[in-house]
Image 1 (cartoon, rainbow, N blue to C red):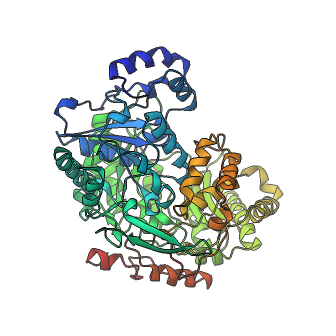
Image 2 (cartoon, rainbow, N blue to C red):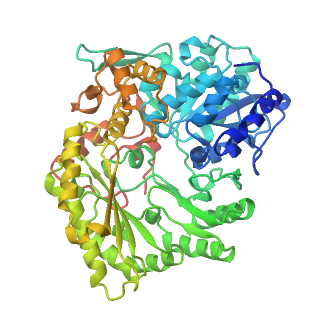
Image 3 (cartoon, helix red, strand yellow):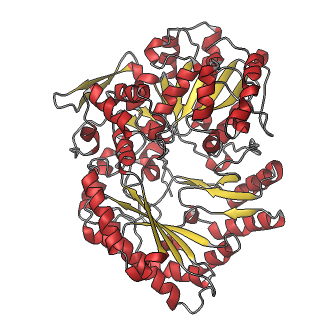
Length: 622
């Protein structure tokens, strides 16, 4: 499938476009895309998103790195997405290799092929894309030339061990600086005609670069890891990269504007990174530390540029908790001046109920029209204390009352089930909260007239993740989750049943996510076997095929329960213990012990909990 030129690929693609859904996602040429002359480029980079165009084009990280890399004259970055099944079938029939959108160049002809790992269930898509590109799937089979260097970054890289056999290296943490450093090194060593191994040994010396082939993993008789030892001169632990001055870090002034609709079809401004809260279930809240903000002036300047240059009619604010911005009132006031002048709608992500005020409500009323989203996460105060959510029943009700008085009538609530120490009483508490919110609506004299309240309850199955206090916990079994789901439905007040809409995730998808999240290198063979069995697009519930994975586990002699349903001891060597995300394991153990006693920890602005980040970055976080 190699050897085709961009012109010949175009001639093969054009007759096929009317045979597939959303053909615009396969042809490129969008406003804002950047095409460079390869003759003037020292290093070419294919940025691969292991899902469809409509999902990948919504990803902020790709937008940032795309603009950042292409700003350098000697580098080029082009976008690559997983073709949907209808187009993939035609590509294989017509022997069309996977190609990049900007120049229609086959991916196999790029120097560096980088994937972003946002979700564990995209792993089989990665193998499928490498296969479509004609690139050997296992890193050991790619020879010793520097061509086709396959690497990855993103949140799942905090434990890349299940896919370590497929990648040459990984980038840990934030990529704005380290990606350019790696590309500079590649350009230097490419001119020297260095070998793949020579490049990887040099790259491993860059902070934030992890080369799995330079580490040896040994196992105990019970299947747990005995040790992870570096070979040659690789560092014993690999420290993630962080951007210290977040207010001045590069941010694109324009985005590639697609011809076809995408999931988040709007401009996006990142307002902060990290989180102060310390919710014990939330991996992002720990691995994105330290907490850093942009100033309101910077945010407004970036929002104004994007609105002006893209033509989008909607602006979204991106963060883990926008309402935790220390200057949120000033920020929203200035942003509203920008968006209202340009007649651009602004949307906010889910908000915390413990800092939701009348002042914030007045600003949000100018933004949203019908519904608000909140995440209590657990149904009782006891369980919210276990997970360190630090949200009370009174705050939930107060927030709902403010929202109803402000004209809102739709409320969406996010919960989890299968949390550590969870009981039937905690599950019934989810239904009780929804019921109390409905009653509150009818008791509120200022509620919107002529409207019927609707409470949407979304319940995810809890998945323990690395670098959280719950990384030691077992995941709930299928029988336990089925019981909890039935108990929730039986707990809903029949009088309000029509006003409450409940949805939840498929258990097998959540279980597989848990297996891959805390797995080790032995899972590479399982992932490969599942892909060979026909598994990809696993995160899409209508395409998920548990039977493919079940057969793969059996073929490889591996029980998924070993990774999902087993409690870890504090002294067990985790597959990710050689990767430093600035969070001390001793802190995670302390937090886990506090969770079992339902003791809370104040957020970072109130009191430093000693997670280790301040020592690693050499300063106080606040």
